[in-house]
Image (cartoon, rainbow, N blue to C red; front, side, top):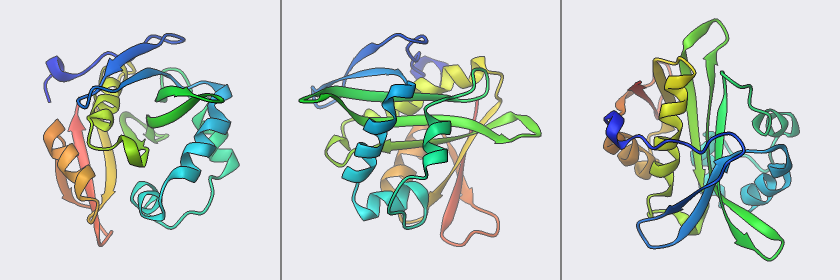
Length: 183
């Protein structure tokens, strides 16, 4: 992926409207503290398979401490964007992507993750979220964005390849691939 295909994320506190490949619109914005309940609801709507693909283990609920860390990114180190749509109770989160410093002792590498609601897949939302993270990761001084993907998660592996991530077997992790993008 070249810098031309990276999308600027919305500025802190700002929202950017995005039209997806299937014609639906989402609001893309930085995560906020008040999103915790919506993140929990989005997690509850995921299938067991989707939860496994995202966390690479069976997970019945979100860890409250991890959730709090997620809605409080550390400026200059972490970043998270959410994609929202209007809902009866205000809004629903239909996608989220984040990066965090991969190793506290190495400020060159960040680890990313992305989650998209079941009925919002295959419409370019995941790639939009990841491409929005890239310029922010560069701005935060990272040189490499990496992640780990279950070997059976074909959709994510195809997306990573399409976006220009290098794929390799994860060292010491059977059934897991390491994906890496040089920023």
